[in-house]
Length: 102
Image 1 (cartoon, rainbow, N blue to C red):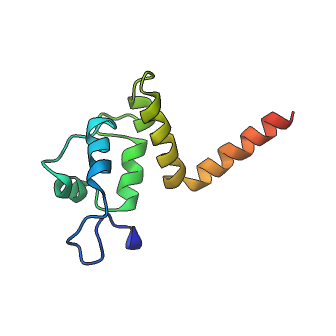
Image 2 (cartoon, rainbow, N blue to C red):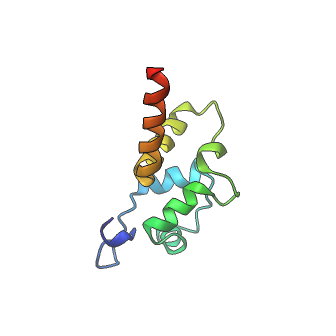
Image 3 (cartoon, rainbow, N blue to C red):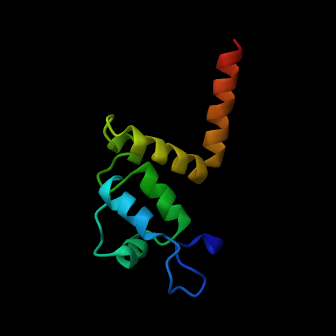
């Protein structure tokens, strides 16, 4: 995601894979926006993607939107959040280490 966009530098080919687009629209609480290019038009940058994971189109954090039975989807979203929010992931790990050593 060079330059913080979800498109290649030439703005023709999306970096966002079809698989990830399907995951976002079928699991994470996003409407399809007609197609992958429409989705990227609404969420064109990495910052927009971060905001979406904090508050999806139904006004909820994506992780909280997914039902508890979907443990596989929840695990995937947790890993995506670790990549999108590295400082928060680091702090969470530090807290876990501290509580484990006590």
